[in-house]
Image (cartoon, rainbow, N blue to C red; front, top):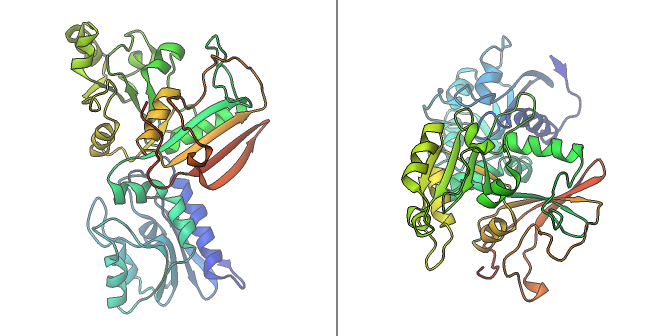
Length: 385
């Protein structure tokens, strides 16, 4: 047992958040949740949601605790669940252990919970206080809340550029824009987000793997936007699709319009393990309907996407208002070149006051490189491509 002197509920909730984040990359589409139990000023139990399908944080903290927990205080960043799913409800064990008071960071947006867990605890005589570090708790699970409240994946756009705004030289060479420390952090992002998306242009020019190279990490589901079905059968993506879940979004009519041998290509891709997802084109355009695509990905349980596309795909997502967060890595390099690619292309805006602005920005340093990240709120209004 750990003696805690003069600790506030906020102090305990910070401990809870530190525990919760250990579930990153392991629990989606569930939220990351931690739990700390305190009695007589001492921490007597702690736990977190360790893997999808496993016990939730509260049950992990309480199930093996040998202390008498009657009247103890329990701290958790998300409202305890109250329904039977893959595991029993957390409210049940909290009541069984005779916890006296529960401090909750934020309520659950899942309609199966959504205030019902708190209500059940109160009906059993347990005091409940909510809103402890509420914003920090929501921020930790921004993916979960977006997925629950909007029914579509949370999209984080990531790119690396030089100080003069280029993602590659005019020759197309792009290895490497940033240093090893920044690229290591990107592997952490690939572990955290459930899917990773790129356009066919990126596949044709770079032949990437789009896997997670972090020790103990989880490979994201690879999603390639390829309306004409041009992905090479000898690309790294296709050759490893039997090992790493891979989805290629395409449009049969568009592929046929360009004379692709679709029947033969489809057969060979499916034999390699590629999941082909037919997506309609956006009205009066020859690009895939991204809103439709995201909905189909959500139906498959993909709650978040790390967008590592080129400038065209990035512009399309921004124009549609489909990006929630941006990770912009900036390397202290200058490559110049009027034709060198930039991270967001398309037509662009005509007035600076109409620029898409990031909110809640943070600046992080990785070796010589910087990363600016922030949220995009509401619909963006970039012009049509």
